[in-house]
Length: 382
Image 1 (cartoon, one colour):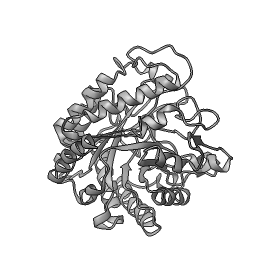
Image 2 (tube, one colour; image 1 turned 60 degrees about the horizontal axis):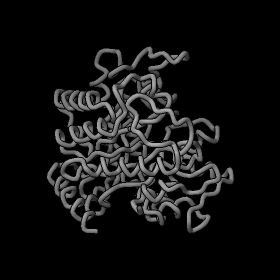
Image 3 (cartoon, helix red, strand yellow; image 1 turned 60 degrees about the vertical axis):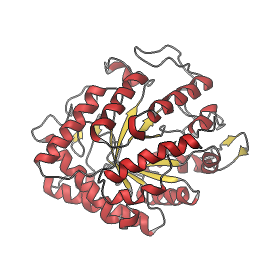
Image 4 (cartoon, one colour; image 1 turned 180 degrees about the vertical axis):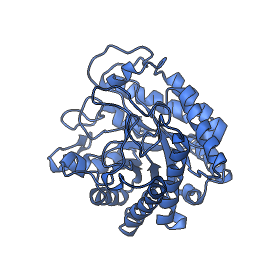
């Protein structure tokens, strides 16, 4: 208990002195460390009859999360997804109902707004179909209006998020199209869009999202806002990204008053093997987090990550040396949490693995829905 109290004091002091906007008013209610997982597909899996259990027996996954020490659930939102069940689960109606459940369970709710009808990530940031013909000034206003409308709807229905991501993995900007063609070859995007002014447009869109979220929330309850980028293990990229973001914001006289830096860190995913980074080590992630926290004084979270509990044991170059076993998975999360907590000035504030209700190779639940040791590690129970 003493160590937790010592960590929350510098965090609250830092947030109080940074001028982080209206969302800082709710900081006093924050736990010292946000931990849990992305469970975006849980409502679908429940309809399909998937059951979950831990040492105490079978239960609602949110109950299992709570009793194992988790305090935060992340859920993605798409603007107008199609009616396929795995897509429709990310529409506003379903997300609102799920968010209400999360809040009722005594857990924090992190809303991940993709600003797309489908996946938004480093390879694609497609505009919603209904927004496709908008001019750029109209698009900025639409992002603000949509963000305000979403948060207003959630607030009025008992599902106001505690945190909101303004975009998902916005490495190249957002709302511009696809950067990868059908053959898997990058044809656009890059570091910012491969068109003039891409960075400046991205900053305007990000600020429009920030404005809308705060307009939709009661001022005393405004969610903390997160800017989320991939490749947390690449300190050169993460430093350049935020340097360019703030340079652009200053040049445009834009406040860009977000609260938290969110990073993805996927050290074991096979699709990253071709990217060519020098290494996915925890040390490189720590270098990235420490530099960001020290330079900008903002809290840092790993909002997406995973480690497999089964599968090919052959490591990729630079991958952390943990086994692909339940015990190795638990050891990975234990080490990752320690690295985040070691960020200077108490500014490492959370770890949220992705897609953890899925019962796949990277889940902390096995193929029968039984909790693996990592569940308690994530909840800091062991």
